[in-house]
Image (tube, rainbow, N blue to C red; front, side, top):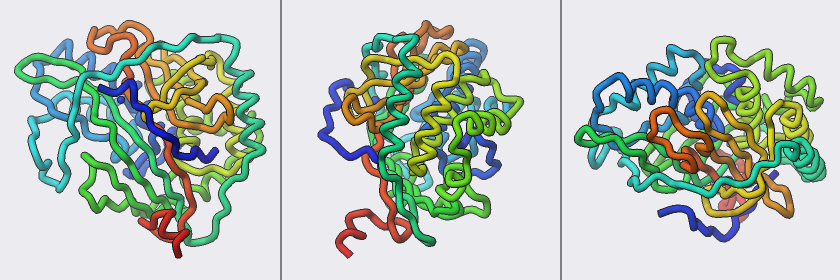
Length: 353
């Protein structure tokens, strides 16, 4: 489950919060895909029905509450499409990330019957892996590389651009009520606090209470999905399970249960080749959201079956015509997971101590 850093080969770069939580906190990387599935439809509607407005970058929805209700989705989509021109410092100590042409990828070959079989193998490997050993007062540290793709309008011309690939570091207390985020373009160099009165759904203490029986886990996910969501049930459940894997460090037994639960969701397939944000090739477990034509892919090392990261790829024509088939709308790579003794402490500092 712990994806070790490896040599980066970004050849393709020129790229659970679904359990309801009312807290505005830093969200797991997987939540970005859930946002995007809801927001893209609204963005496309806005592009078709409103005049273009200058926009230089997208605000990172990781820093916002999970968008589960249609009204909230519309509000956030409006903020993205109707943003004002920004340059240099953003006024809050952050500097917009550089953007370039939209990241594209070769679509891997889909095996419609291979998803459950691959997930069974992955679950066995996860069960054999050692999970984190934690003590009261410690923090979960996750280092990743991420980037997203979005519409950008300048001088009445809308194009699709991708963010510069950048590092993201998150610390989270075991109870999920404290933490820290450092991410260029979204925080200043020092970062921002994730402290709040309510626990995050991705907190280790919460994950440790979830069922390790796959059927019971899937039923719990189903019960707690928002009934007013716009994403179809099966896709929402798949994304929710993915959120438990990304910016978190679940116990080994729960990790195995997540994969077994995902194998029970209709439409889950195997993709023979997928590339994480740093260029590492692997095999993927994926599911297509038929509403927007985007496929959510969980990427694993071919040999060890360790989780490498995830991405969202446009695999069917987009109604707006902006997102071409093969566009990578979001990408992430998990570089390190660790348990550290304090907030903002680096694993290397702990080892040195």
